[in-house]
Image (cartoon, rainbow, N blue to C red; front, side, top):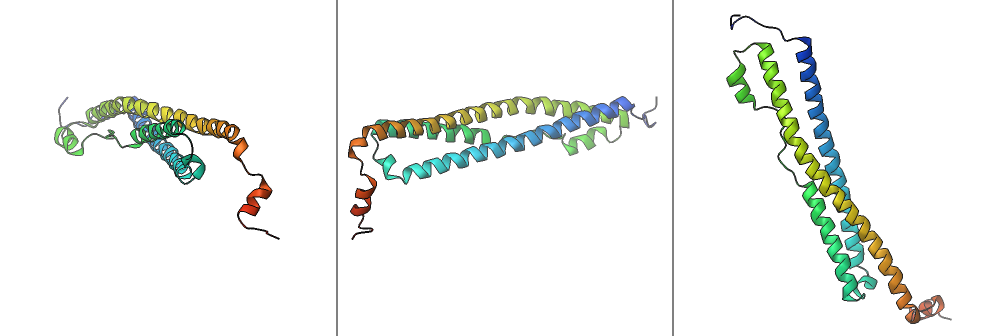
Length: 180
């Protein structure tokens, strides 16, 4: 067959090309969804940290409790940032290389090469996405541990300080409200 003759791609070539390209598009939607989840985890983590640092109760806790909670919060932040940070994902073949190598080729050969390139991008991205998922899952698990730890510390500290607490009437009088 002469190089100048146009060879039409088979229907199966077109189908394979469309399916691989669609799967690659699905990967990028998955990456966007994971970035959104990482952002939500970072926001929740920041809200917890801000609330704790602005509370007198937290600052008056023994250092041991502070250390545990702050280490967990820092771990959540680090893992969520690792999941959130952008890595280089492959999406398409380089247009200049494609034009340079395949401008004179048949449509079928060009479509075949595009399909192989998309498959390579898909496989390369798959490993990076799995890594991103792992960091996201770890940060979510640690965030749950942070919430559980704060609840537990709150419970333990309320038992220990029960003898030093004011009742409602004493607190109101102490703050000079509703004095008679």
